[in-house]
Length: 74
Image (cartoon, rainbow, N blue to C red; front, side, top):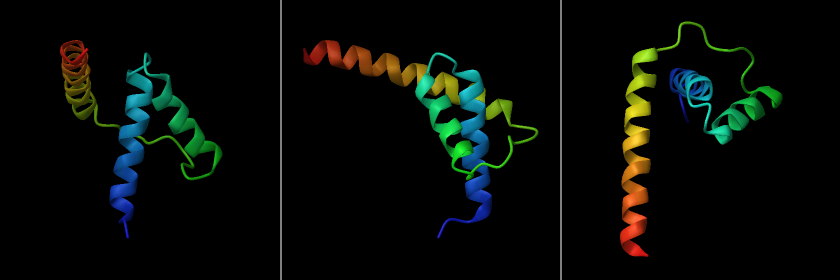
């Protein structure tokens, strides 16, 4: 069973990403769906921007890597 602390952190990260990664609408849709279902009752307070900036760097590098890898495969 997942602890409440892990659930809260996942919600906090998803909220951060939905705000920062505006060009990824699926992330925002997933967060809004959790709100509609009542899983997320309120937006997190004091989100960790360092983790968000770190995630964006990793995400951009990953998507770049995947695009290069797919061009080699084709």
